[in-house]
Image 1 (cartoon, each protein chain N blue to C red):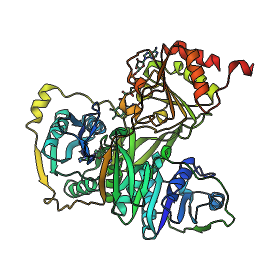
Image 2: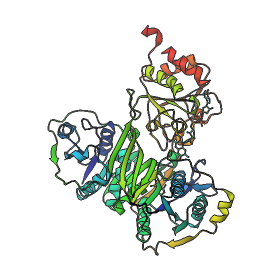
Image 3: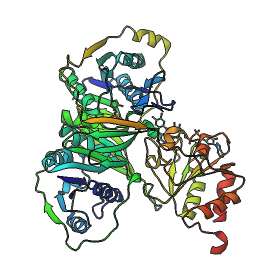
Image 4: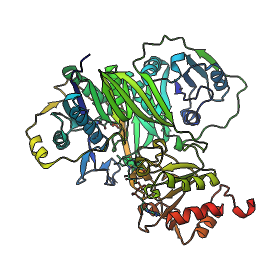
Length: 262
Length: 311
Ligand SMILES: Cc1cc2nc3c(=O)[nH]c(=O)nc-3n(C[C@H](O)[C@H](O)[C@H](O)COP(=O)(O)OP(=O)(O)OC[C@H]3O[C@@H](n4cnc5c(N)ncnc54)[C@H](O)[C@@H]3O)c2cc1C
Ligand SMILES: Nc1ncnc2c1ncn2[C@@H]1O[C@H](COP(=O)(O)O)[C@@H](O)[C@H]1O
């Protein structure tokens, strides 16, 4: 059986940079993202990197990067193109999209694209949902491999190692399949300047929700956003003895004592 | 309406996560059914039927369900949706994998990582690595929720006088699309991270897999579970499932001892609800000290063995 080159779709989300601590708006309506540094969701960077590696290995020959959001998310699409993706698609949407909406949009795109592999981040670091990949797989009625730490594609099959509670689980599945990336799948590269320049000439298509005949769901309503109760810094102790004394006297738990045991 | 809990178990007993999810489900104030899929689970179903607070136990027993995949479970669970207003799972790797797949088949969004149930359709959940708490209202007729287990407690065990009804589902297993290849479980006699009373966690500064023995020695004297930062896991010092943080396990023990961990927001997201936080770091400016109840500026290679020796 010959290995036909495969098509991959990578979904990337523009989010607050992971180094930035978010502020809650004074009116508690949401977080304040004005003048905040935005970046590609770290798990999406890992997804792009994996797709590019599959391309370099000759397994994939076409990588479409999709981002759903306002015009500014073209910045993240361009970075993915600079890293080695071939084509970009921005689905214009100026209101927040839910995981189900993203999944429905990707399902819709799949009707035209017929991709073999979907690579998504396991979680977006702003909404912390960890839902979209699983939802897309459900809508496409295809297998899902979440939290992947190793991906091997062979003969239209994927062998994926997943990070799960208790250790690692390796599964095999036919394509098309949805893979969501965990932190240890790879280490994303940085784009070289010439590639950044080249990326400006790669195709980037913009579609609207009405082009795709998608109406957003609105089952989950955001009522308010609060700052969590902040912990106060406690006492700095000078020695191990002081620390053990503090632990023994302040905590409910039994701290065994060396002397008593002997 | 009723609530359905999707059980996690090891074929012999329900996992602690499922019992905590039951504790959360009780706050919804409606009858609760428990769905158990597995192989040879008759006894497990019997045992579950005597847990107070459970109205009905649904079992789906099939050899192929020894390690059930979401691809198989989701359509079956989604087909029960007309009976349930709420479907609850724990925020575990099983729950996170399965819940969205069920939700999508029910054409709804799921609410991930619920930390507080305000009313049967309003919840609190952390966003931005726990740096903000969102209150959300779920208007869906069928609500799929995952429950952050460190934020709820399991109900007191008092076996019921009248065991719950057990209903064995006879459902034909569709051709599985996913095949099991292998599983590598990290063996340990130490307490599990989630649910542990004391956790000793090591970071990048531990320096090597063999150096981690000083963490294990302290943990064993304390009867504690062991955790780690992402940097320690990435460096291969310790197994991935022991990572604490935004993208690892979220824990809230009585005592959390962070050793050689700087305190990045992603790490804090996983442990800042611990009752007492202890930090040992040789950098007095390490951010971990800003959340620690007790801080010690010291070289961990001296301080930790000294603590162990004192126990
Ligand atoms: C998307 C994303 C998700 C992430 N998720 C997680 C997560 O779930 N969990 C997580 O932990 N991280 C996570 N991270 C990584 C996080 O940002 C930090 O990089 C990581 O927590 C750092 O680990 P560390 O504190 O062990 O290492 P470092 O930051 O390198 O800190 C080491 C500390 O040890 C101290 N030290 C050095 N030598 C000694 C000594 N001899 N004695 C005492 N102290 C010493 C140093 O002063 C320093 O403070 C995530 C990052 C990203 C981008
Ligand atoms: N607006 C979006 N545009 C493109 N991809 C997205 C978007 N939202 C979520 N995703 C994808 O879904 C993954 C998981 O997101 P979530 O389910 O929100 O945690 C992300 O890492 C992306 O790969």
